Structure formats: structure tokens, C-alpha cells
Amino acid sequence: MINTEFIKSSHPDFDKVKQIRTEVFTYEQGANVGEEFDGFDSDEKTLYALVYKDGEPSATGRIAELSPQCCKIGRIAVKKSQRGYGLGKVLVESLLKKCYDLGYKTVKVDSQLHAVDFYKKSGFTPTGEKTIIDRGIEHLPMQMTED
Image (cartoon, rainbow, N blue to C red; front, side, top):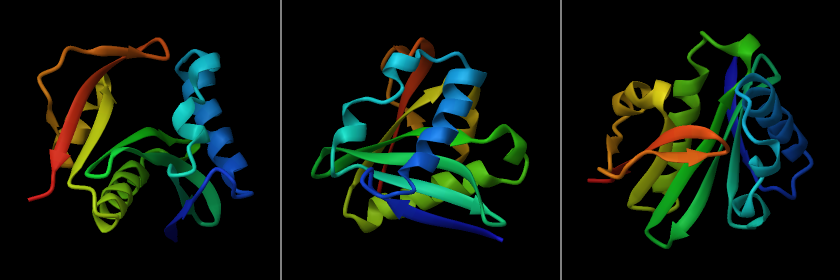
């Protein structure tokens, strides 16, 4: 069974979010550990999704407000042992639904280059901006606007 819950950084389960992100970004991908947790993580408005598969915390992502009409999803991570079950798709769909339920009209994401096609399939389009370096990893800015 797969289910998603949304929490704030003050929730006790935020430790699970931190564990997944550290495992995926720092240990697997070599992201700069000092930059993994940023100002959005201390913002009380930021929401975190935790996807559970058979009761195990398996994936996470966050929603950070950029303006009252625009938010950014990010820090999308699926544990290596849980890949291949469609959890990334479940996670992004859950995040997008929550964004629109909260009233955001535009959702942005900075996609790692290997994931650009994944985000395109979810409805995102490149913004036309140049790639950026986030935590030492190259990303392409993308966005989706609710019709």
C-alpha cells in the first residue's frame, strides 16, 4: 500500500524527511552537505510530503512558497531500495495536487538534468532560463501553470 502524508518541519516525522534527503542527495549524489538544508527548511510555511510504501518512509519532497500565487516543489527524493515502484510519480502528483489545493497558480521546479523528461511527462516546461548549480548539481528551471 502507498500513501502520502504532509507535515511541517516541526513534526516529529521530519527526521524521516531528513534521513531520506541525506541518503539520496548527500551520500548517493554527492550534494554539498552544508547546503542540503536551506532557508526554506526553516520557513514555517514549507510543507513536506512523505510517501510511505507498505508502512516504510520511502520518498519525500517539499513545497516552498515563493509568492502567494507561486510555489516551488523540490528536494524530490526516493530511497534507492524503493525505486521502480512509481513512487516518484506518486510523490510529484501528490505535491502538485496539494499546491493547487492551497491556491497556487504556478508551480516551479529545478530539475536535475537526468530528470527533465520525467518532469515534462508531469506537465512541466522549461522556463527558458539557463541551468543553475544547486548543491553542486546542475539543474534546469521548469514550471507549470494551472489552466
